[in-house]
Amino acid sequence: MSTVQDQQDQIQPTADPLPGARGGNPAVELGDVSVVYPGGNVGLESVSLAIDRGEFAFLVGPTGCGKSTFIRLLLKEMEPSRGRVLIAARDIGALPRKKVPRLRRNIGVVFQDYKLLPNRTVYDNVAYSLQVIGESRSEIRRKVPEVLRLVGLTTKLHNYPDELSGGEQQRVSMARAFVNHPPLLLADEPTGNLDPETSIGIMQLLYRVNRTGTTVIVATHDREMVDRMRRRVVELKEGRLVRDERSGLYRPDESTREFVTRLREPSGVAGGN
Amino acid sequence: MRLSFFLRESLRALRRNAAPSLAAFATILITTLVLGVFIPVVRAATAKTNEVRNKIELEVFIHDDATNAEVADLGAKIRAVPHVDRIEFISKAEALAILRERLGKKSSIVNDLPGNPLPRSYRIKLDDPDNVNLVKAALQPVDPQGKKGSISPAIEDIKDREDDTNKILSATSTIKILLASLSALLVVASVLLVANTIRLSVFARRREVEVMKLVGATNWFIRWPFVIEGLMVGFLGGVGAVGLLWVAKKTVVDPLSDRFALIAAPQTIEFQLLVVLLLAAATAVSALGSGLTLRRFLRV
Image 1 (cartoon, rainbow over the protein chains, first blue to last red):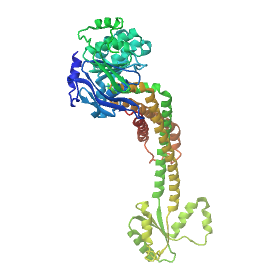
Image 2 (image 1 turned 90 degrees about the horizontal axis):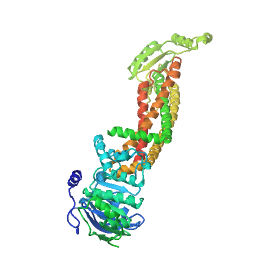
Image 3 (image 1 turned 90 degrees about the vertical axis):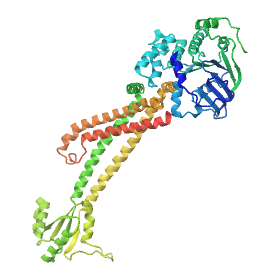
Image 4 (image 1 turned 180 degrees about the vertical axis):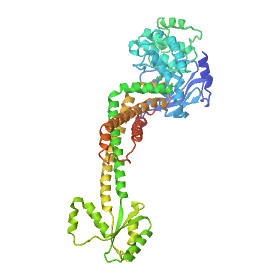
């Protein structure tokens, strides 16, 4: 998709790559990052990590392991106590507060609880996210139906969130996150509230988004789903990085249909523990 | 596009946040109403006081045994004093005539007087009532020993009407202080109520705010709808108060003003100007309230 490529091209590297970076052009890079919450709780401890452009990575671990801290760091909702966080080779610690909205426009986020506005229709929920960044009316009219077609909600445009199933609500939230074709998509427990069959649909969607060139990072404790996807897995435990595995079975030409067929296969092909 | 979006969002918030908005609206209405009564009353009272002050004149009483030459000399000396606008000589007969006139129906008692006890006098008009003490000092200079002298032996006494004026001044200043402190309290209450309304509105719309932050809306894009909501509450309160004031003016003040000089005082503020002032004040108060909340509760 050309729009994604354009946006990625606009982001010029400004900071030096971190020592030990894997080369290439990482979309997200953490250099020895620690987060200590007020009161002494450790969110992250000396985490160094690089996720390449176009990569699909899982962030796994039990509740409280630092997954959400990781997501909040990337959104600059909080600052690391130590270390550097780089997005598209740009140190976001050095980003002035005024530029934070611009950073967030280049990151799509999906949450477990969808964060939809209950008193607006599906269409308005997605359109709202464009209105508040000052998008023109004609652009909104063009982009919203397009992205709702992508997530398969064309028939539910005028329904309110409470008239939708959980999976459909998460699709709306995905549509909102992806409507601007951000180069980076973060998902915090996107399938946490959904049954396995619906989860497959959401994963399928995340995969489809990833295939357009978007870097996708999914924080989850849905171990089964991770194992079936055979993508990169980063495991955190009590704030420390304990496993970083590139699953071998990465097939770049796998179509969405093949991918789903594989997801529906019986479990047991899993890599890692 | 943006403006219509902000307006839509604010109206939506007003509808959902009706109860606290109504409280803020009512307080602003009352505040504006009090201000709307206060401003013309103070203006009229001040005008009346000035009118009285402008009437201040000095009266120089002359010894009965002063010669005509001394009296004429005194007149010339008074005319030479700075700040004296013009002077008027009152003879004994004229003084008696003035007294008769002042007594009206009871003037017959003057006939019982043995002869005419009233002294001759000069009435002095000043260029500005504030200079009354200057002129008095010039007529009765104080010598280095602190003894009060006089520019002419013909002068018996000098009187002014300062005491009367002081009474009026203190009465009007009491009214001013009372009304001003009442307005100040009401303004504080209005600011706090608007602040509270906006705070509740922020709370009611926290999901929207959260989403706006997530998708990268700028701080002011998030704040504007709240500011507009506050301004609308204030402006509507102001409009309501102006409406009530207009009704009161048409039904009560205008008919009465034919009979009462104070109400009809021409120096009282123009109604149009008053309306503009009140609306500006109501809007400013609500802007202050909104700003207060957004500074504290919407750090984005």
